[in-house]
Length: 248
View (cartoon, one colour):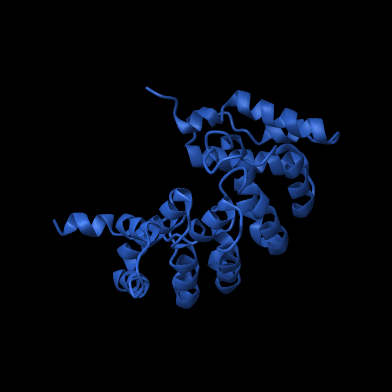
């Protein structure tokens, strides 16, 4: 049996992360950091471990939110050189992202600036979730801009960030309050050359089919008014994979 995801965030990981912070700041409070780790830590679920470590990070750093984001930049390493790797190589950054997600609304501008670089190392869709829910128009406008970014990870985030049923996240239909932006973002991405992005767009529409199939069909039928490329055809097939099964 393979190692469970939660077990990557074990006592050794907790110690190593404290060591990384201590290397870049002389006043990192190691004791306060470790005090946040409960005795029953080994019994906790994956998401509960993320919360515990995020709280420990806050206790150890003691700084303001924007100051802590600057510290994260000192330890997070180089950008991923390929489309993949955000979990295989960037897995250890997950608790940092969880911290940012929990405090994202404290300084939205700082959060947006941070996540644009964070998502090039690990996944950023959880970080933007609170902003999407509480400031939907602002976040969707930001996604629209990102949908035309030259960086593949940012383009993927522009779709993955407003998925309705994002794994390990609270389900939200907030993006449906901005239907025109919803359509524009996915339309900007429908010809994307990256399979990484195509899969996200397909998954986004697949989520949409489960709550508003009429709207999902509307988007796709609009695309069909012009000849479909190979990339767009693949996205549509991926989006409708559950519908296709139910009709057989």
